[in-house]
Length: 131
Image 1 (cartoon, rainbow, N blue to C red):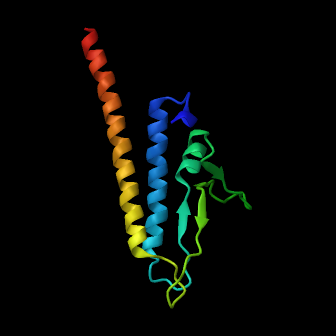
Image 2: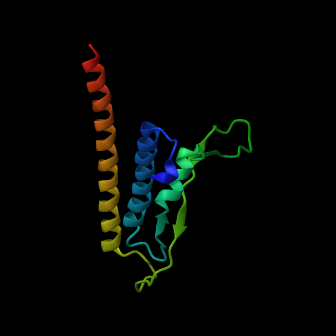
Image 3: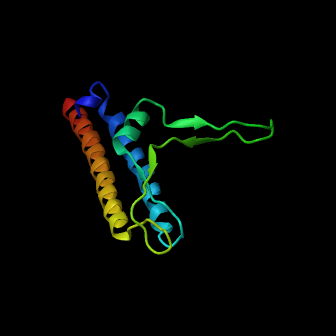
């Protein structure tokens, strides 16, 4: 955690939860495309993306080519396409690996949300003891 020194706990945990949610979408996309021919799975670099979220660089605006286009933005995630060995249909997804990654990511999210709840409980308890 030394690399996140100077960042308040709420912002760090909120960023970690947001990053875990983005990672969940990437993994879920891989699982959804397990039978798609020529699909290459993607991976998100959790630490790199979390640093970007904490730095405020997690959103970019999309270019509008017409004044009537809706103003939109999308998340910037450190995603990398992997080229592993493939099956007969050139799909490179290993469903067991994806499910393990999904389980690990879910555990991270639960851990961060539990830490956030404990942090707020400690603040509440401190305020209750002031009376």
